Image (cartoon, rainbow, N blue to C red; front, top):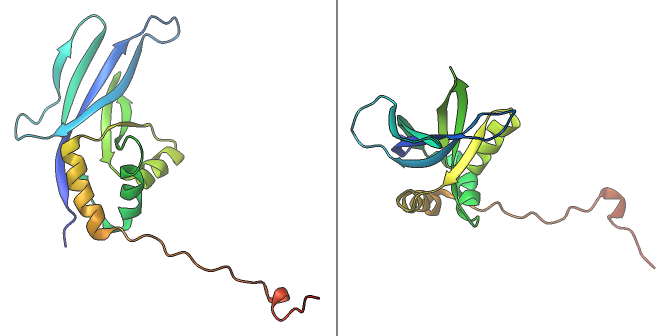
Length: 155
């Protein structure tokens, strides 16, 4: 069975900073459904303070073994789409897009640059349907008494 997939595009923003050590700051600022338009990166808007680029061609794939990570993300105050990105030739380029809290944490633990953007409402409904079908809470196990306490008589 193929993993449910939703095509998305990432909006990356460059902000000009008034800082003597760093002239600009890059970050993802949005994830939108990817429409069947041009496939190349394109400038959306630019002024003296900031510029935004649209990066099409990404997909969010949902996998059953990540259902716990999706559930954790959805039950936070602000659910996110996590974007892993790198600097390439002076420009921020997204590499991976996920909605799994666990997958994002593994990437960050590996030293990757990952930022979250609020999960759009239309993606929330799609993710919610998957989580309701596949998330199974972990069963709590009873405490196991160490052998030294078994059969001990207390007076």
